[in-house]
Image (cartoon, rainbow, N blue to C red; front, top):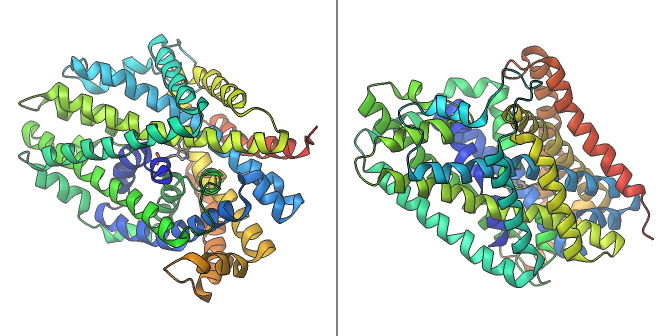
Length: 471
Ligand code: TRP
């Protein structure tokens, strides 16, 4: 349940529908499922079995295979931390929008409202003002994460028991409301009509793999540290498949909730769905709010439910990151866990504050693009190398097969040793070529270099952490 909580988050509700829509609609389900079965589930099995085997967070797991690989574990941890920093900013926007939705404050012009809300500047290097509302929301988000974690397992169990079923139920309510609106079918048609021509573009495949990594919280030490709580007799393949399918299922459901409402919007305003949809971050903060305000009854309520769903699903993803980092630190330096948890949350908060400026949304986008397309893919590759070759897939397979219903055959070794790494190298290379050729979102080169710098910096930080010897 905790693993599902970590996996399901803004990635399913805010990211999946627009990535799907941008990359061929229904046809995107093909690369998505291929990514799920060639890398998502196999790597999830690796992470679960590694956590169960070594009873440790990522850094020590890597170093137990061989001490010289410890940095790869810290790299995973660093990636989780960076994601949490910008992720908390989107959660803060959700919190602000939760209150805005009560009065439908975006009025008739949600796009303008969003820009004004962000105080968005014209370039990532023009900071603009600090939006105090977002800063307070960030403080709230990080405090909530800290309060859930500092008491340890008991309060985490509570938080998970609340933040997984509740938003799932609410999402179902949103989907039912959406589907029963006039025009919903056009929206769904738009979401699901396959555009197979798109499948020939590598960027579509890239998007599918990046989405899988991001959404399954892979390559960040998160699933490893969570699996360290598994008992030796627990079934790994079942857990991995359940986690992956729950994650995919909720993403798919979120698409219904979002696109049915878009269909309704186009039905009432006469604007075609493709124009109504907008893209990227805007889908959750512009289009959905616009659509909601056209609802005949209880518009504010449905707006509030939507942002509450985002917020609660986001929360358990965010605190899973803290567990990954604190697990690594506590195991290496034997410090007190509540204290480390406090330091991580404080640091996370302080680093996210600059993202509450007018340039913040640019950097959220840049960090997301670079860390998911390069950072996570590199760490995933390291996992295939270290656990697949150095430790050896046969050992993992034997361990998994001892307790699991679903038997892994030899083919699984090939998946981890050859198929997944080849795909990951290809993704990284193709992303890089695409970046050189097309840039990203028209952003200035300096900003892109800073994005690449984040990936490099996280690696340097990882090596630095490895070199700090325990006292
Ligand atoms: N799995 C989360 C989602 O789908 C995203 C995520 C991955 C995340 N790693 C994280 C969120 C670390 C916060 C911190 O939304």
